[in-house]
Length: 79
Image (cartoon, rainbow, N blue to C red; front, side, top):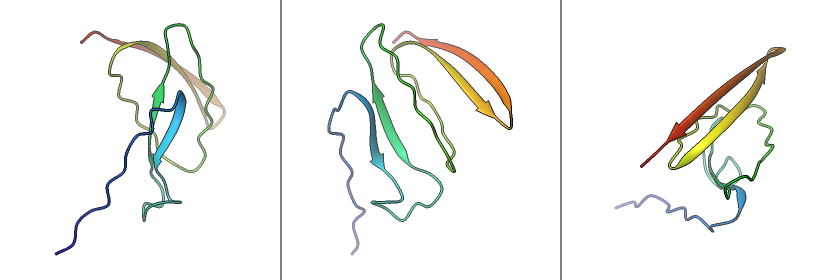
């Protein structure tokens, strides 16, 4: 019987890479977590991977540039 590998958060502030092509068989996708306190900001550049954002609490705003075009997307979530 084969068991899947378990990946654990280290609760690092800012961006934390959890699953990547460096520690798994996934080639074009990874899994990370962003922990920020109110008022903090993070600039993060992604190249060659798809990204999905799941907001668990609070408000955020994303700026994304693709193919020379800039997109801004506000979001909020109240549990």
